[in-house]
Image (cartoon, rainbow, N blue to C red; front, side, top):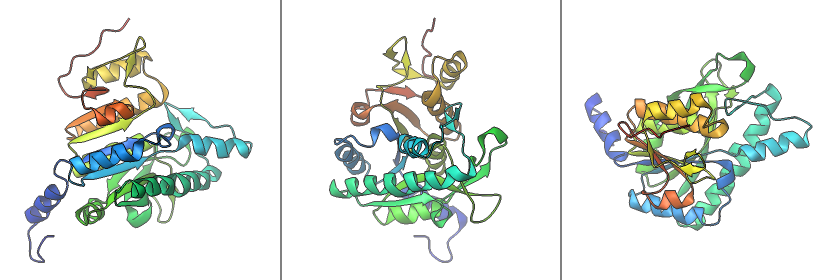
Length: 276
C-alpha cells in the first residue's frame, strides 16, 4: 500500500509491484467447460505468485438463450450486435451463470477466485461504439486498476465478465467483446503476457498453427480473411494490447496454456507466415 503522504511515483511503483509478471487469461465460452481447465489455471496462478487475472466470455450461452427467445444472434467482425433487450440476456449469461460456474470451479482447484463484472465497482468503463449497427456495444475506455490491485494484492484472482459500465450515462451497461476487455485489462496492469484461450491450437494458416506472428502479420491475416470471426477479433485485440505495452500475446488451446512453446505467439519482430 502507498503511505498517506506518498507521491504519485510511489503509487505507480506500488501498482507495478503488485502486477509484476502478471498474466491475463481470456477464456472463450467454448473452452470454459473443460474439466482440466481449473487445474491449468491454478498452475498459472502458482507460477505467477498469484498474479493471475481471468476475463471470460460465454457467447454460446448467450446465443442459446437468444434462440430460445426466438432471436437470431447477429455478429459483425466477430462481435455481437446487441439490442436493448439483449443486454439483460448477456448480463444473465455472462455476469451470472458463466461467471459463477467458473469461480466455483477455480475455488475447487484451490484458486482464491472472486467473480465480478465490469459494472461492479465500475471496474471496466466503455464508450458506446460509433458503429450504430452494433447497438448497445462499447469499446473499452477505462480500467479501474486500483480495484484490481486491491484484489490481487489481497491474494484474490479476479474473474471478470466483460459487461461494462457506460461512459455516456451512469447505470447503463454495455456489451463489450471479451477479447477487447482482456486486452484493455492486460494493458492497464502492464501484464507480462495476455493469453487468449481458444478451441483451436493457435492461429491456423492452411490448417496448421503458426508459431509466431508480428502485429503486421496478424493484421494481414485479418485483411485477407484467413483469420475471420472470433479469431479476427482476437488478433485485433492482440495488436491493441501489444501497442499499449503488453509484453507478449499468445493464442492457443488448453495445451498451449500449460506449455509456452505451443500456440501462436504474437510479438513485435516475429516472422510473418507465408500465405497463398
